[in-house]
Amino acid sequence: MLYGKDAPRHSQRIYVRVSEKTPYLPPEATPHPNQLRRLSGMIIGGDWDLQTKALLSCPRVHYCFLHWKEGLAWKDTGCYEYLLGIIHNRGRIDGLRSLDDIKIRYCRLDELYKKVKKDGRLLNAHELGKARGRNLENKGILIHIGRKGEPIFGGSGCHRIAMAISLGIQKIPAKLGMVHIEYIPKWLAQVKKQV
Image (cartoon, rainbow, N blue to C red; front, side):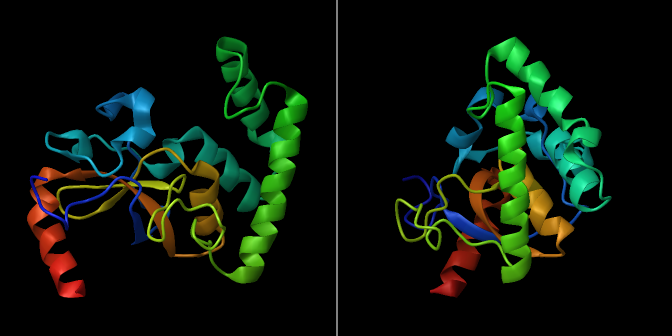
């Protein structure tokens, strides 16, 4: 362990502040775009954190904002066509294989939205009974940490981050993504303060 026991860990739960201004790291700027979840807890240098885009450039986040913030029906946001295009090319996405699957999923997302609105917060994986460990966020919203400590949305958990922002929930549980090597001294100092 190069950075010791306080180094970032895979699937580590962190709490971060998010807003519409939270930057998004698109797949083409990610060191290993096909293995987003495997990047969790990795300490990586380079300029990846300088290649971010606006959060709304993430298609699924954009469709969610159109629905939850602007009031458009899901069918009018473009999300069905977007997902059907991916299904056509790959055969499926996130277990979805047809328009019916998509409609069922988005109906469930609306139910979850109502619950989150009522609760006023997103539950973490432990509270949902889905954590493999007490402080792990297994399939949570992927948040990378840039060189200045800024949270950067990693593209996994699009619906949940859009849900939280649409509802004005500023602090969310997230799965730690990559951490820029230049931020590691401050990371370690923060961990020591918490002990």
